[in-house]
Image 1 (tube, rainbow, N blue to C red):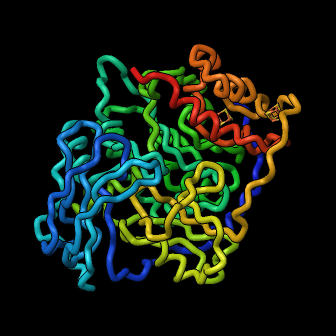
Image 2: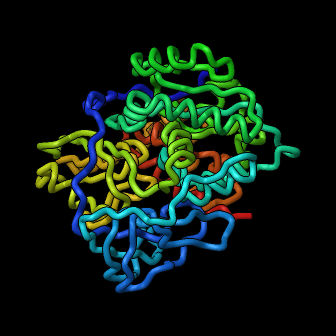
Length: 427
Ligand code: SF4
Ligand code: SF4
């Protein structure tokens, strides 16, 4: 097994045994027109329009984008400006639900019979990486096989962040969909080998998938050590194949395509029922949640306040989209669940530890999977020394947070790295 540096964290996967159930339909949803990397969508509906489940309500002509569909049936009550967690503004469609959940009558399973029709179907269903990064999946599939031939599909089921169990539940509840999705992608993308990677803290999922794929020679189940950040793209490519994705490269440059486990099973389900991405599984957990912790299928656009009320989380001081290492703090509980939300975590303690001076212990360097030097990056950032930041390869930083976690002086190293990356001019 190839291995990069990382850290051991308490798993806290208390919702592991919680089977996924439907979250109660909210009275209204707010669906942002940007839920993916790339160009935001334009709204295709206006105030007063009636919409149905799965109806396309947003799209863009840009290559790097993905259409957006209504998660509910009801009436559009507003198309408003919406402040995204990253500080930019996009439009959002507000829909009052009618409680009927009438499915759009135009929806049909797609006809998939070659590579291009698979890519078109994946775009039509609005799929973006369900692991949290939000990279449009059709863009990932649209590599040029003549320039960058891909021989290995790596399925990321590591789920290395504490608390989150949504991909684990996908493995346990939808193993057939995962396998069928992998075979579909392999067939039409011409990828001979698949490595389905699962951390060793999920032995029942490993056993189940080994049993289900025993007769399938093209799918290899890879057991990874449970060490954070095992699920980071470059890390999992190295762990599964020994190949190094260099600075500025995509995994396809190394003959690999990485796909999240829930993403690949959604491709299969869409190929069968033609229902686009309108709901997703999330883990709802954290010490401020007094009731109803678990895994839920939540309509996209459901406000986080609805979940907090369901969990009687009145004492929550810190609420995260995603896990405690790479998740993002909510600034407002009226923000919705989006395509990239794999967890909502609510905690009672919102205090940050007091920062002290660097003692040059080197722990931040030793824990970084890429051997970066966060203490030097901090110094270069403070001096606004762009050339030095380039030499220190700050753009390789994936914001995993290992350095911040390990730092005895509680320096906000990962956050500084993110700011430092903003100083480097983009090509
Ligand atoms: S946040 Fe960046 S610098 Fe820190 S450990 Fe992760 S990759 Fe390395
Ligand atoms: S871990 Fe913290 S204290 Fe140690 S060298 Fe890095 S920044 Fe300094």
